Image (cartoon, rainbow, N blue to C red; front, side, top):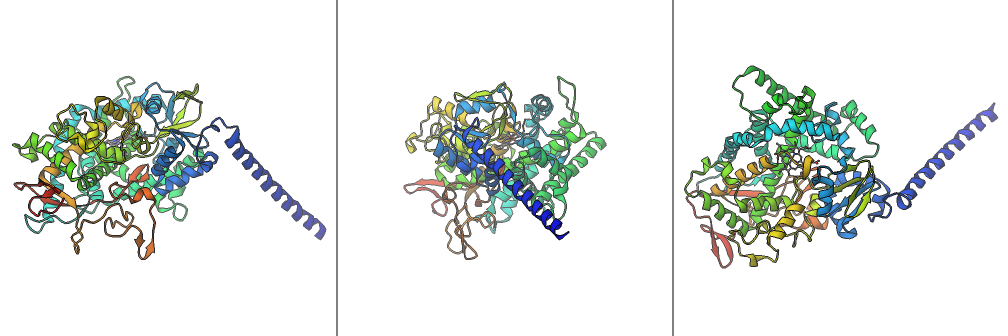
Amino acid sequence: MTFLLVSQDVQQETLLVAGVAGLSLVVFGILCYRLTLHRLAAYPGPLLARLTDWVTVYQTSTGDRHLDQLKEHNKYGSIVRIGPNTLSFNTISAVKAIYTNRQGNVRKAPWYTVIEASAGNANSIHAEVDRNVHASHRRVMEHAFTDKSLRASEVLLVQNVQTFRDIILRTRESDKDWSGPFNMSQWSTYLNYDIMGDLVFGRRFNVMTSDAHRSVPRLLMNSTAFIYTFASMPFKAFCRILLASGVLGLPVIGGTMAKDDRKFYQYAEHVLEERIATEQNSSTTRKDIMHYLLHATDPLTGKGFSREQLQVESSLLIAAGADTTSLTLAAALFYLVHNPRVKHTLVEELQSVCSSEDWDQISPSKLISLPYLRAVVDETLRLSPPVPSSLPREVLKGGITIDGNYVSEGTVVGVSAYAIHRNSDYFPEPETFYPERWIPTNCDNPTPSSLSNVPRTRDSVALARQAFVAFSQGSRGCIGRQLAYYELHTALALLLYRFDIRLARDPLTQKPVKDSTDWREGLVGVMDPKEEKGVKKVWREERTREEQFQLFDRFLSDRNGPMVEFKDKVGGQGLQKTREGYVDAKTTRTA
Ligand code: HEM
C-alpha cells in the first residue's frame, strides 16, 4: 500500500516536471521563432520587445511609452519592431499608407476591441473595428459637427471662458495685483468639462464653480490608464471577456483603476439618461451634439444610433472632447509663459484684429483664422500631442507596402505622434518651440526669421503639415478637430487679451517656480523633482527639460501644471520691449 502511494507521488512529480519542461520548451521555441524565422525577424528593435508583448504592457504602465518610442526610433531608424508582431514607422509616407489613405488595407487593431468592453456590447465610433460599421456611425455623428452646429456653440464657448475670467479676477487682492496661482492642468480641465457639458449635453457641469463633478476627470484618467495597459496584454479575446464580465470591478479582485473604469461609464450613462429625459420633456431644447445624435440617421442606410450606441458615444465624447483640449490649453499656456517673445507676438496679432471691439463679444469664428494663434496651437500640439503614442492598425488580407516594405496580413503597424513630431527631417530643431515654422515667410508675419534657422518656405510648411498627426488623419482621424480649434482659439485669445500671464512666483523668493516637476503630488513647481520627502527621485533625462511640457502617456495624457498667475491688463500697457527682452511695463520685471 505504502509502496503504491509513494509510486503515485513519484508519478505525479514526474508528470509535473515533464509538464514544466514541455511548456518551457514550447516557450523557448516560440521565442527562438520570433527572433529568427518570424516574418518580422529582419526588422531592428529592442531584443525584449521583439520577444514579447509584455514590454508594451510595461511601457504603457509607466507613462513613458511615447519617450520610449522616440528613443527607439532615434536608435534603430524609421522602422522599429516594437512587439513580436508590431512595427512602428516614423515617416510621412507611412502616415499616408496607414492613416491618410482611405483605401489603405488596414483596420483598427484588436487593442480597440478591448478598450470599451466594460461599457457593454456596442462600440463607439472610436473603438469600432469594422470599417463599414464605422463609416455608417461616422456619417451619423457628422451631423453634430457641421459648420452650422459649430457656430451655434460659439456663444457657449465665450460664456464659459468668461466664467473662468471672473474666477481669476476674484482671486486678486486689488485691481493691480497678480491673481493667485492657478494650476492650469486642473483649471483648463474644469473649463473644458464645462464646455463639453454645454456642447454635448446642453447643460453645464459647473466643474469650475463647484466641487460636485470634479472627481470625474480623475475617474476618466484612471479609467484610460487602466484600459491602456489592460488592452495591451496578449490574449485580447480573453481580456475582453474578463472586462465585460464585470469581475474586475468587484471588491478585492479589481484595482481602483478597474473600478474607476466602470464608474466612468456609469457616470456617462447617468448624464445621458438625464439628457434624454430633457429631450422628451422640452420642446425648446437647444441643438447640442446629443440632440443630433438622438435624431440623426445615416443617409445611406437610414439607421440612427441605438440606446446602447448612444451610451458609448456619450462616454467617448466626454473623454475625447474634454481631456485632449484641456491638455492642449494647459500646454499652450506653459509654452507662452516660457516664451515671452511668442506671447508678445501673439498679443500683437490679437490686438491688431480686435482693438476697437468689445472682446467679450468677439465671435470665435473671427479668431479661428488668425495665423499666429493657429501656429501657437499647432506648435503646442506638435511638441505635446495629447495622444502621443502610435495608434495601432492591423494589416488586412493582401498586405500593404509601407516605405518600400511589404507588410503581411495580421501585422500591427502605427506611427507615434510624439516621435514623428520630433523627426528633424520634417521639423528642424525639433525640441524648440517655434510657432513661426507653421507660417511661410512670404506671409505677413511680424517675427524676424533671423530668430531661428528653421526654414519657413511654402515647401517646408507643407512638409510639416503632412507630418502633423496630433488629430491623426484620414477616415479615422478626429471628428472634433475643428471644434477643438474653436475652443482653443477662443480660450487663448480671450485670456490673453484680458490678462498678462506669468509663471507663479515663489511667495518667499518671488522667483518663478519651476515646472515639469512633481505631477503626482500636484506640487508642480514647488519641489525639486529629485527630492520628495527626503527620498532622491531621478527623472529620466527627457523629463528634466524645463522648457518642455511633460506628458504622461495613458493613451490620453496625464499632466500637471503649469502654475500660472494672471494680471488684468484692460487699460494697462502689457509687455514692453527693452534691450533685455520683453518686460512687464509696470513692474519692470523680466517676463
Ligand atoms: C486638441 C484636441 C484633440 C485632439 C488632439 C484629438 C485627437 C484625436 C485623435 C488622435 C484621434 C484618433 C484616435 C485613434 O485613432 O485611436 C481622435 C479621434 C476622435 N476624436 Fe479627437 N481630439 C481632440 C479633440 C476632440 C474633440 C473636441 C472631440 C469632440 C467633442 C473629439 C472627438 C473625437 C472622436 C469622436 C474621435 C473618434 C473618431 C473616429 O474614430 O471616427 N476630439 N481624436
